Length: 214
Image (cartoon, rainbow, N blue to C red; front, side, top):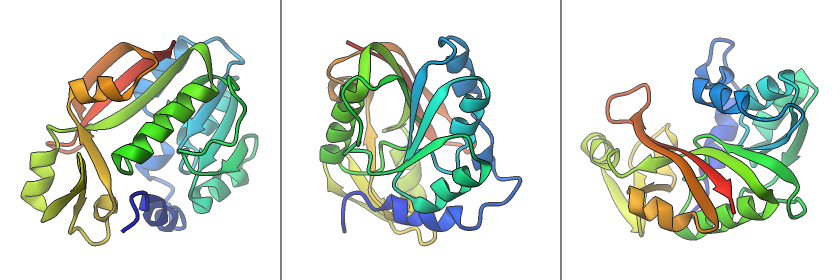
């Protein structure tokens, strides 16, 4: 199995997105983060999906680029209009150095093994201006026992797991980390905020992080 195949699953999901889907609603955390940014700032929405954040941020007056490896999601954004879309992989960003004031990546960059994750973090740092911010999420190791209780799984490389869960993206590689491991991954960033929180389901722990590019 390739270490970065979750986009295939999500591309299928975006083909049949429903009007009341949670994937169309911007996260409160993202809204709060955006409230502290200068209007007109250039933001990369890395792993934009169907545009729940890219479209909302654009409506707030930001200059947004929506990037994803799944063309189905970008097609939905293009239907709405007003946002530049880019089809590309997260570890090979087709942008110049220091091209963005801020990067948003919500529930995205942990889809892969550690090599892909490190390349993605390096790319996010490269395209950010010094002092620019990164808002995102990672999977917590506190979540791993809950996943293993529900599905048979195996660790295919350090901290990278796949699960026998047909019909879900859990069949594709996911990276789980503890706080010290997360901090080591984000070389070249200063941590402004880090919190381990459950999402909508019990045991669904995610790191919520805000970083500043050094």
